[in-house]
Structures are given as C-alpha cells and as structure tokens.
Image 1 (cartoon, rainbow over the protein chains, first blue to last red):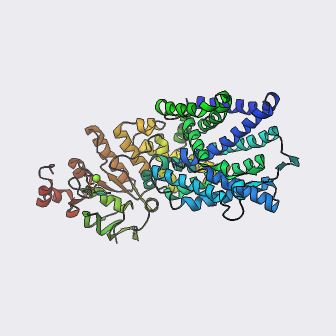
Image 2: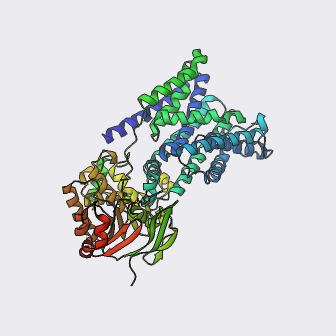
Length: 323
Length: 255
Ligand SMILES: Nc1ncnc2c1ncn2[C@@H]1O[C@H](COP(=O)(O)OP(=O)(O)OP(=O)(O)O)[C@@H](O)[C@H]1O
Ligand SMILES: [Mg+2]
C-alpha cells in the first residue's frame, strides 16, 4: 500500500512538472501570472506547514516572515544595488533570526494562545512597516524600483521567465521538504505535534524544536518574499496583512495539515478557484467561507491527508534482517 | 558506594496541597523497586519530580552521583532515565516503529542540514536507528505491529509500545507508571516476564503498581507512600506484614 502511494505521488509530481514546463505553450500571460501566484503561495504554504502542520504550532502571523524577506530584498536591492538572487540567503537569515527572536518568549504557549499572539505579531510587523520605523521601509507607499533578477546573464522579466524561476524553486523546496519529513528532524517535529509532554519525556528538546520549526519556516517564507519582491518590483505593507496569514492558514488546513502534496493542492485550489469563478466576484468570499465550513465538518483531516510513511514494510523487514 | 538513584527529602506542593512531603529513598543499581500507595498518595508526582516534569520545592535527587533535580526532562532522559506514563502517552497518529524511534532521538545526532543533504553517515544512522527500533518492538512482543498506527493498537499493546520507546533511549533506569493498568491477567503475566527480561539487560526498574501480586512478585524492594509521606520501605515480606501499610490499604485493597 505504501509503495503504491509513493508511485502515485511520483506520477502526480511528474504530471505537474510536465504541465508547468509546457504551460507557456498554451496559457496566456494572465494565466501564467496566476500560475506564478500559485507557485509563491505553494512555497508560503509549505513553509507554514513546517510550523503548523508538522510541529502543530498555531501560527496565524506567517505573513510577517514573508514581509521580512521581501523587505530585506527590497532594501538591499534599492539601497545597495545587490543583485536580487544574492539577497535570497540574506532574506532567509534575517527572517529566521527575526522568527527566533519573536518566537522565543511565546513559543511554549498552548495552541489557542499562540494563535492569538501570532496574529498580534503579524499586525505589529505590518503597522511597523506602515509607520516606516527604521526609515527604511518607505511607509505606506512601500518600496519601488526593485531590480529584476538575472540568472546566468538572462534578465528575468516576463511571466513565463518568472514561471521557470519560481517553479524551479518550488521543485527544490518540495524535494528538500520531503527529505526533511523523512528524517530525525521531521520526526521530532511530529512528536512535538502529537504530544509535547511525551516528546520531551522521550528525550526530545521540545523548546529547541519549536524554535527550529519557526526559524526554518520563516527562512523559507523569507526567501519566497525575495521572489515576490523581484516579481513585483514594488512592495507595500498591504501585501502582508492579516488576511494573507489567514489564507495561508486555510491552505494548510484545507489541503491536509502535515501532508506536502495536500498543502500543494490546498494552495493551488485557494489561488485558482477564485480566478475560475471571477464572474461571481461578489459571492466569492461567501462560497469560500461555505467551502471551508463544509470541509471542516465533512473532512477535517484535509483533502489529501496522506503522508508518505517513513518506514515502509520493506524497510522494517530489512532492519529486522540486519540484526 | 552510593545508589543509582538517590531521592532525598523531596517535597512538592500544589497550592495548599502537599502532594509529596519529605520523601527519601534509594534505588540500587540492578534492582526492581516498587512504589506503592493508595490513590492520590503522590506516586506519580514523585515520578514527575524524578523525570523533571515538576520541580521539587525542597530536596535533592541524584542519579549516578549527579544532581538531576534542576535538569530539564530531555536532559534527564539523556542522562539515562526513561519513563512510561500512567495514562499512556503515545504519538497516536504515528506508526509503532516511529514511536520507538522517538526513544532513539537522544542517542542520534543528525539535524535539519543532515536531513536535507543526506550524507552517508546520516543514512547509516537512520538505518541503525530503525534496526534498533525493530529490535525493541520484538523485545516487548510487538514484532508484527511495526507499521500499525499507535492509536490502532490494543490497550495492552500500547502499554508495551511505551516500554519499547523508553528502552530505545538506552536507559540505565526505567520508571514505569502502572505498567499493568488496563491489562488482563494474561497480559500482566507477560508483563512480569518482560520486567524480568529488562532486568537481565542490566537495566534498573522503578515502578508504580496497584496490582499487589505483581508488585510482590516482581519487586525486591518496596517503598510505600500515603498522603505524600513515606510510611514504610523494605522487602515484600516485611511490607506485607507492616501494620501501617495494612492500615493504609484497609478498605481499598488487600496486601
Ligand atoms: N499538576 C497538579 N496540580 C495540582 N494537584 C496535583 C497535580 N498533580 C497531582 N496533584 C495532586 O497531588 C496528589 C497526588 O497525586 P498523584 O498523581 O501523585 O497520586 P498517585 O499516587 O499517582 O495516585 P494514583 O494512584 O491515583 O495515580 C493528588 O491529590 C493530586 O490531585
Ligand atoms: Mg499516579
């Protein structure tokens, strides 16, 4: 059974890669841009999934880390003329440090309390950006004139160029996150989610892993911020509001908390469906709300809840034989 | 020579209630020690003090000649004390083998970077950890259940899975909080066998148990608590004959 799941997943990924690679042949610039949006949200949702889905920490302020990454890139690009892609590691590090700093005092809080605190965190970051706290963020207008990224001398400008850049990053992320999921690190996050007391009692430094989940999730959201800033060339605080965090939260819960393919599906649906039903613009949120309610009642585990089993039957047999 | 575990004058209060009051006892290396007493006597609280889940208000706890009463729980596990819980605490949505691997966590090293890059030593570490987990499952008699989710196991099996998880941490002392709780007679009988086999591995055992026949058969030293205080201590025969113990248990259970 486990083997079949893995095969199905591999086929699913192969089809997705083929679709993205060929998309510029049959999609216009508008839909390519939608796909780019999907890619960015998949990255954000996967990064939140580390914190919310894998470690079970209710973070409803994830957009703050996204903002920190985007602003890091924007500032480095406009003030210091640093090439965009070189700012990727800077965004990751700044966002991770920021997350570690703000999460340290609150990360031990129980689920619902942590949720409220992270909402506050998201708002504080947004308000700080609006008020131009360090004289670096350009206030409510934000920062414009962010340079375009160059890859091997090629300037990335048009939607299909961004398509390949963003989705290459998605592909690498999915690969790495699957590896993470299948490791001692990934298991530690799951132990934390399932029962923090038992995790600590089994020898897992739960305080450390809570922070690591936040740091790693924030680092990835920060790098996504870099891609976003590069694609938009202009960023402002309103792109990183409370609603953004709520949407990311929904993507993870809707798709299947803790399941990488589930979260990818969740992010895709939440971005694409409103585009498909553009005609009913006014009823969009209503439908959205209804879908969420029905989902929570009918399928609380998410659409694609399955997770690749870390140890397949064959691994256990092999482990048993090697004694 | 000092004992493996030394509990000295330990006190713990919750608000006005003194759950554990000035309790002292030793656990000698290689022995099986029972901690008994009526409901609410402070047994689980004593365990939680040893494992660092609670901080003692007063008193000291030493393990292998080293103070552990200010250490955090995961550090205490690393120091060599592993435990099970009175009301089974497994990782419900994870498979049995993944549950046991939690015990291996403190004996392995690979971090996030190792997971992402998968160097050969990390792959080897994972393989060895899995082999050990499978071994521990077999040791407690759960060979065929490696891939089952913890929540789908029978209650008695869940208790044994918890023991396997504790053993995977290479403890020198395991402390078991009511290991026979919810088990039927046959399972209890198997548990006594398991306790014997754990001991043969050179692991010291401290256990709380209400099943007196199990305590009398499995333990060579017994500590009795009542209302948070130690009222008796000694080998099973002397405990069974002790008038204070009989009085404490009168109306609740026979000794
Ligand atoms: N976290 C806590 N907060 C407040 N009171 C507590 C706490 N933990 C234990 N107590 C109280 O301390 C006393 C001792 O509890 P403890 O769980 O140690 O008893 P026990 O000997 O394990 O009993 P049982 O055989 O029922 O498991 C009880 O009165 C209990 O209500
Ligand atoms: Mg108890």
